[in-house]
Amino acid sequence: MKDRIRQLRAAWSQLREVDDKAIALILLGATAGLLLGVGLGFLITIWAMPVFGLMFAVLGALIVFNRRVQKAQYNAIEGQPGAAAAVLNIMRGQFFVTPAVAVNAKQDMVHRVVGRCGVVLVGEGSGQRVKGLLAKERKRLKRVVGDTTITSIVVGDNEGQVALNKLQTTVNKLPRELKKSDVPKLERRLKPLDRGAPVPKGIDPLAASNRKRPKPR
Image (cartoon, rainbow, N blue to C red):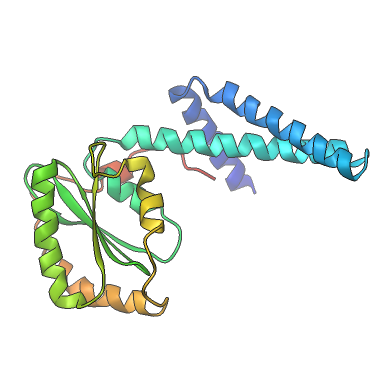
């Protein structure tokens, strides 16, 4: 409990530094929750109004707080090499994320995700260059995964690309085709391909994920 409180305090301290709208929006969320809770409590019994009001006020504040923290996270890492890997690494569910399975000297890179949706290759960098990286990596994996679906995603704000803040949602919405027990088996089959993967000097594909930033709770 003490650790959680410390984490919330740290996240709140960092959030105030980068988001001047946070306080107003959190108070707005708490007010909306209070009104909703009081209304629901009134429908049950008048004695439930303060209890429901308090519970929903706290819930509303926490929901807004988490969303603002998440937005601050994305703003802190957006545009940096490895930003997509940082977002993928905090996904919930049965996903195996391997950052920077392919990287070039221009800091374009491809990350691999293995889940029940099959294999997802996530590229970040210049559109044309990263497409070439994705095509090479897809060809390399095809010999190992066989008929397993390989989905390619390019992170960015241009047409046909996926915004960084929508990356997790996009991956989670992909159709499931593998059983839970098959996911780790597929990951183990792909691991040997990562040995000795070249990373150009001066590039840290995990730099964005190592940055200090608020953690949603």
